[in-house]
Length: 111
Length: 113
Image (cartoon, rainbow over all chains, first blue to last red; front, side, top):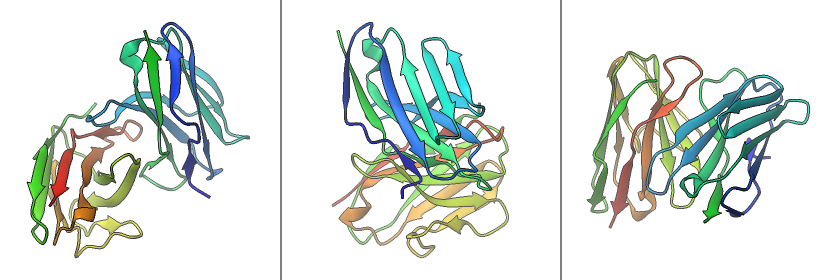
């Protein structure tokens, strides 16, 4: 079982719509969860971190965490063409200082 | 958040040679992380570098192939040794000075021919 799984294929959304990304993780003791955005040819950029069950909102982004289900999601509201990128889910396993990354989901916002 | 200067940004190298990648951080950090991102793939941790001690390598990565130096709290190097085309990847350094905000360098795009 992979530490972090993002199974959805590329996601195409019309401009202004909501993009929804999902991520599951295997280490039940994990306490820190992150979403990174990576534009083509660029390094990952942190957009959200979440540590407690529930929702965390930051501008057009909302992260949702459910530790019982070992599930993290990211919602992008009012999607813009500039949101077109690969979104990486990352988890800090218990007792570790490193991050484990999912394979990423490509989001394409269609004007 | 910390600012990382990573260089070179890209290089094309002959097989059998070595390349050293440098990362300079604008603040002191205990740990620096080196990742590899192969084409179309996610990030894989190569090793964690602590100042004053040997780097800790992840499964599948060995010191002879990826020697790391960490001479002080703001600087680290990763060398990719005896390169083959399979080493063509993006290499990234990362730090986490606050404990909860991992920042990445701009990456080194390596092509081995």
